[in-house]
Image 1 (cartoon, rainbow, N blue to C red):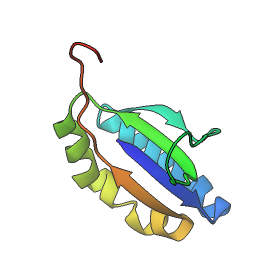
Image 2: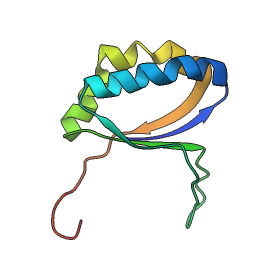
Image 3: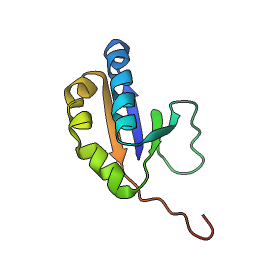
Image 4: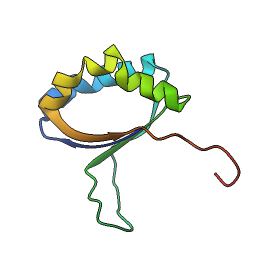
Length: 96
């Protein structure tokens, strides 16, 4: 799962952050990266704050974004950030 987010209210984000961590962990997910420097090498994408999470399967990631733990944070999330969220099926075969 990959998120490009723009945090515009740090105070509300400070309330949101531990709750989303708990929600991700409750669904067996883990954060691979949260924020940090990003450099666009090609294209015109202008990322803000990149977050990447890993789940055991595509279906587990889908279940997470539909879960009560995640959706109950919608109001809080919208009060502190704008984001684009993508769930992507991983590949673990030859050449990966």
